[in-house]
Length: 186
Image 1 (cartoon, rainbow, N blue to C red):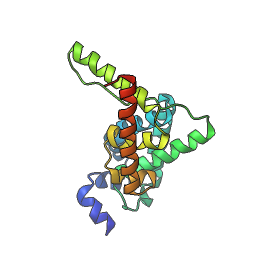
Image 2 (tube, rainbow, N blue to C red):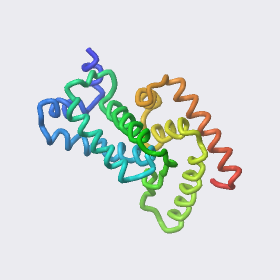
Image 3 (cartoon, one colour):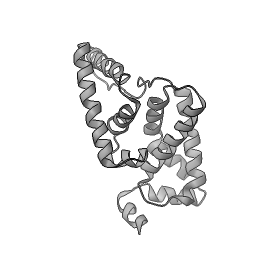
Image 4 (cartoon, rainbow, N blue to C red):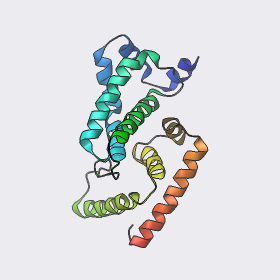
């Protein structure tokens, strides 16, 4: 029943079936669809690209091993983010926490030189302000704005209610505005 609900909306169901059947090309397809977003999330979470890449590989291998246990209670994308977050949390418990670096999570598009300088300055101001947010607020912002998860998907990833996500998001945006105003930022 749950599979039918997500099968209609989740284009990853056929890919997941391939993974369950042992098709490595399906795992490659899953990686191609979600690897970039997961890596961006993990870089922002861990503050280190090398660690993020290792956790991403661990996440994809866990998805390969556990695909047969997927219960279709969420989208496959959300399920992958939950795995990635849990793996990152385990790694952080082993190592001293680092400040979140969003340099690689924020990318500028192809613009003219002046626009690029302005965009980079704005991104630097936001990046700096993000460091001042409490980790729970920063994590919600990264999931919703940088990884484009819905508040409901972010709630699933974080294991909290939709209302808590919305509340943290609201507080985070207010705090960012205050910080940016104080710093003379954007």
